[in-house]
Amino acid sequence: MSQTKLLCVLHRSPPAHGAAQVGDFIASSDTLQTKFICKFITIKSSDTIQDIGKINLKKIYLVLELYIKILWNLLVFRPHKLYFTASIKSVAFYRDVLLSTLWKCYKLFKPLDIYYHYHTKGVNNFISTANYKKSLTRFFLNDVNLILLSPMLEDDFNNVATYQHTYFLPNGVEDHHTQKSFTNYIQNKDFSSMNILYLSNMIKSKGYFEVLKLAKTFQNTKMHFHFAGGWQNENDEVEFFNYIQDNHLQDNITFHGFVNGTQKQKLFENSHVFLFPTRYPNEAFPLSVLEAFSYGLPILATDEASIPYIVNKDTGVLIKEFSELEEKLQYVITTLVNKKSSEICRKRYLENFSLKRFEENLVSLLKENR
Image (tube, one colour):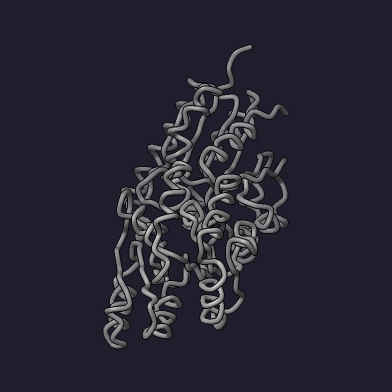
C-alpha cells in the first residue's frame, strides 16, 4: 500500500505567535515525515505582531503567491490529506475562504481529507455581526474536519456546524530539561525571594497592566516582577514605563523585552510564579502557560478559554476577577511555591503538553481512516 501524501499549509515564524510556533514544530517533525509523504507551504503574511490584520501591497502579492503554490501542489503532488492553519476573522479569514476554493474544487475529482487547525477563538463573535459572515464561514467549514485545542472551545462553532468531525489536540512546547537536569535545577533553586513572571505579547488585554498594578501593591516586599514580550504599539510601551517611573517601581520591576533561547530559559528558571491574568478576546490555549509548567512553575491566571483545561488545583489557581489577584498571589506563594509543587507541575507538562505528546497525538489523528 502506497504511503499517504500530506499537504500542510501553515503559519511559521516570524512573527512568533502561538500558531507560528506550532507550525515551526510540525514542519520540522521527523515522525510526521516518516509516517507521511509531506509537503509544507508557509502562510506568509505579517512580519511582526503589529502587522497582523493590516492590508498592504506586499500582503496582496503574498496571497497570490500562496494561491499559486497551493494550486501547483494540488495538481502535481496530489495529496490525500490536507492540513491547514485556519484564521477566524479579519483579512486573513477572507484570504482563507479564497484559498479553500482550490481544495474544494480538487475534492470534486479526488478524495481528500481536510483538517482545519484552529489556534484561537472568536468564530461566534465574528459571525454574529453579519449574515454574510455566517454564510461564508459555513461554506468555508463545509465537509472538513476541525482540530481544536480543547473541548472548551467547541461551543464556538455551534452556529456553523457544516463540518464533519471534531478532534482535540492540546498544544505542546519544547522541553529544555532532562529529568536529571530538572531535578538538579529544583534542588538548587533559591526559594528565599520571589520572582513573579509575566511572559507573553505585551498586549493590554493579556493582563500585563494588571500585573504592573500588582507590583505596586507588593512594592515593599521581597517580590520582584519580571515582564517579557514584544510591544503591540508605542503608546502602551510609553504608558508602561511612565507608570513605573511615577510609582517609583524601578527596584521592583525588570522589563526584558522579547526573549528567546537561553535568555528565555534563564528567565523561567529564575522565576517562582507565572502570572497570566488574560482577557484577550482570541485567547485559546496559551503556550506560555505550558512553558511555565515545563520549568515547574505554578500558575496564577484567569479562567479564560482553555486555561481551566490546562491548570488544575494542584498546579495553580484561577480567578474570575482581577480584584482577586492580590489574595490569590499570596495563596500561591504560601502553598504552591515549593519543590514538591514544582515536580507536580513538571509532571503535568510531561504527561499532557510535551512536544512528544503533541506529535504522537497529531500523527494518530491524521492516520485515522474514514
